[in-house]
Length: 77
Ligand code: SF4
Image (cartoon, rainbow, N blue to C red; front, side):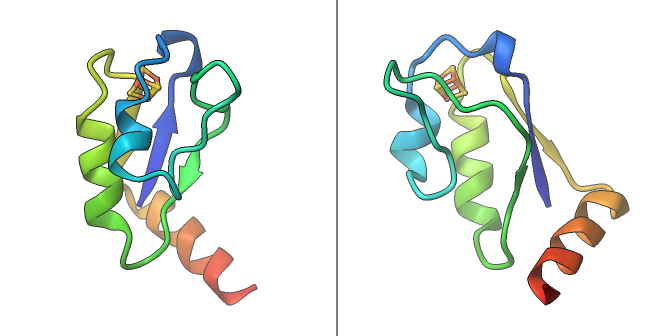
């Protein structure tokens, strides 16, 4: 699973971080860091909660096969 980060949409509410601070990294002003997030196996529930907590819909959950494969490949490196 991957979280697609729509960085320009982020308004710095930090609700994602409040749900899962190890998954959603913020800058010093409380905005999500740019770049999509590959979610490790076992962290899917936390990541989903964090993404759904975003009131700006800046975090899109990607469950396509390509997203799953990229997590699988990273876990083997
Ligand atoms: S909850 Fe949404 S708007 Fe707030 S910091 Fe996270 S991504 Fe940005």
